[in-house]
Amino acid sequence: MEIAYLFHGHSRSWKSCYRNFFDNVYSQIPGDIFIHTWNTVNTNRGSYWNGWDDLTGKNLEESSKLADISGIHASYNPKILYIEQDKDPNVPIEYIKDHHFSRANLGVKNMLEGSRKIFEIARNYKKYDIYFSTRMDINYTEKFKVEELSKDHILCSNSRPDGIYDIWMAGPENYMDVKTKYYYFIDDYWYKKNYNEIFYESALKEYLIGDNKIPVSISNSKCEIVRIFGNSTFVK
Image (cartoon, rainbow, N blue to C red; front, side, top):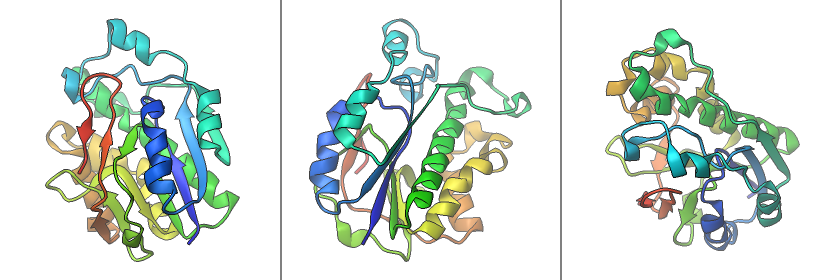
């Protein structure tokens, strides 16, 4: 089975996570690595852990540092490393009902943009059986269960009652093509709605499973998100 690992998003805590990626995932199923990231370590937007406020003080200073691109390249040895200038997401202002709360959520569109771009780069580089979309701030804490991978579904992590969690996902080209195209449809599924009352995962589930009939399975492999501020978030 030929696999492409598609890293996207800010580099954040990559130094704390990359060894376990290679020890627990890559060692189980080696493949080609492709990375899309931004030129800064982190976004300047907050999240649920700080009340959705924009970052200030030391947190903003840490987030605004330039990403260690040479270190990332040396550690991951990617086929392609695509770096872009960090930016505010392209979301029409008329979709925004609560400017203060929504600024962090709007950054999801940048995440989806990066995941789509690196998927297109990988599939144009070579055809793979499985495309594994992930992030550099995910710490895979145990050996990945390769037997869970299949061309018959998208495999994803889970920590929500919705039964779908967009931390990492893996599947064949046709399914991952649909998944990464969510970038073009998130306005209709989330931003145009009262998304302060709708989980991102619920909107994605409606798009993937409800409207596109993509079969999604939940992985039993354990991992955690390593935050650069605050505590880590366990996914399984």
